[in-house]
Amino acid sequence: MAAISCANCSLQYYSQLNQPLEASCVLLLIMLGKVSLNLFMLGVRRWDVKQSFMGYFCISLALLDFTLLVTIAFISYFEDFALWGVRFTKYHICLFTQIISLMYGVLHYPVCLVSVLDYYMTVAQTRKPASIGQRLLYILSVIFIWISVLFYILKVPAVSAELEIQNHFFTCPFYISVQSYWLSLAILFVIGVALVICWSEVITMVRSVRIISFTSVTVLIFSYASDCDCTVCKKQLLTRLLICFLGTWTPFVFLQMIILLLGAQIPAYMEMNVPWLYFINSFLIATAYWFRCHDIQLTEGMWSADPFVSWKFCFIPFNNQNTEQAEKPGTEIIC
Image (cartoon, rainbow, N blue to C red; front, top):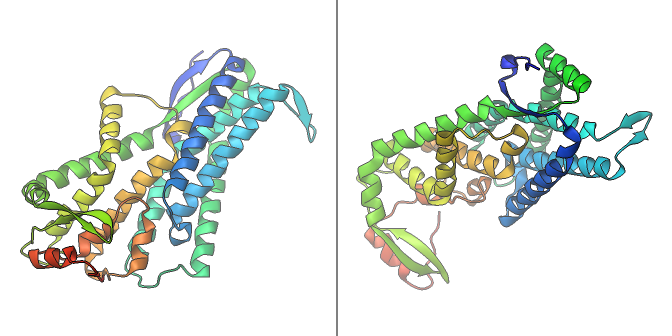
């Protein structure tokens, strides 16, 4: 059976199983692993979700994945039952997973766009906590995006027709997202261009690194002093942003390179996950910092948007004198 084209919704037909009932155990294990990974990543670092749109969206994604896991487990256990006048069978496991995959597949661009606009407008704010109105706006934005994507998926003629055909022939297709492919390619391209532009600066700064103990914590000190202030010379700032980003996400960058080179086709319900959103979050924060560098004020509240990367290093002037002072016991660095 030929698959119906779904180019309008930026998704590609990946594969199908003629016996979807046998896939329920595999889907259950995959979703169990994904939910566990989401919970681990959300709990491994403290992150005030009230500070950004991305924080609220990560929570909503983890909740939706957990809901899908519970649904799959419930249907797998009871196999055939009726609830509120609707009969559920194991085929609905594939159907729900298809809908979730289609939703996840078109979410990459909207989430990134809203997140980068959020950081661009709020990165220079000096107040620590987000206002009640701002938090409410984040919640409403997340709900609106999910509802809009669901209606978009169900109303696209090609998708609706394909789901009806799959329901008739009991097929269980999986989808991959074109959006995630181009987004990964764009991020790797930007990182590559930044490395080419700042290669000499990166080498010089990395060679100047020193490991010291500061307030009983091992930290890295870059004693290299640039010729201009980081908020004035964007090349120097770009170098520091690049070092901070790659210092945390280099394994994930290599993973993205391997996936793209091998042409691995990962189903959309697996590809959209919390670790991927953390990676995107750091990249978008770095982008916002670079464009708004002249408006950045060094307050402790502005660093809480990223649970993994400490961007404070990018905006603190380092020189040999500051390094020596940092090594003295009892010295405080005020930002």
